[in-house]
Length: 338
Image 1 (cartoon, rainbow, N blue to C red):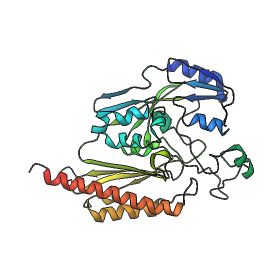
Image 2 (cartoon, rainbow, N blue to C red):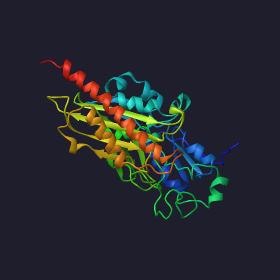
Image 3 (cartoon, one colour):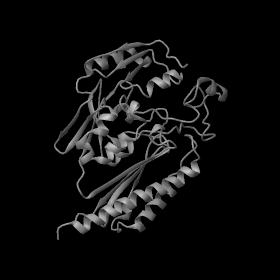
Image 4 (cartoon, rainbow, N blue to C red):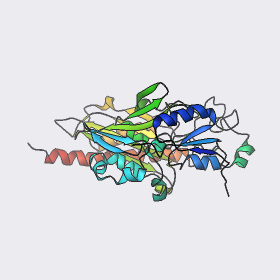
């Protein structure tokens, strides 16, 4: 049985109180909301925390609200509530579907939006028991100075497995963050970096309080997906979100867009489609996007699963998503008022 080491739990009711506790506790403190990632890592002794500061009691932390064509998600919103919200499913279905793909119902009932966005990076060499890690002599992420994924590598390449991240990046979402210096806003497309040890733009004394997502117009087509061996039960071996910005007067032609691919490394890969502007949204475009994904995305052996297969699988997934959006664009063109 994996046991938790003793810790002190604080339950503040205001953001100011949470920030004060975080500052007072220093490096030994961790923020907790749902705890579905933090607590297993503590049980595996992957990380230690002498003090846990619960954010569950913060007023409005689990809210969901619409205002001025924008959706505001409290960082403490449960993934199950996001996945089930009728208005989100109607207006931003790619986001609701991404939330619904996370783990199983029990996890989604506890896990939060902010927790999934700030999910710690994972690696087949670090997310193991302490005995396994000791036998390897550790790694850059755990009491060592080598990378077992990229021998000789100078940086940690553990993978971000967040299912919400690709959709949020494709939707141009922004993160609302508070800290000792006040509040700030960070675009989600700049929130992640390539350092597997510190992969998010969030200081140790800051708190992610909300995410804001703009509504997209009918000229934006979105499709997302995840591939895992046991579907939602497992962490993804690949996930992605494809955004096609269609011509307003001719929805069968492309103006631009973005392909976001996750679980490659600490930061999702963002491939802009501006060079394909003017292309017809058809099967040929599906082949071109699949080829782009294959050539520019090279999975590493940082998560369970063969990286060669994952690369080929990504191309197939992107092609299927593009074909589905092609069919929708063709239907929209046929039914548009003349």
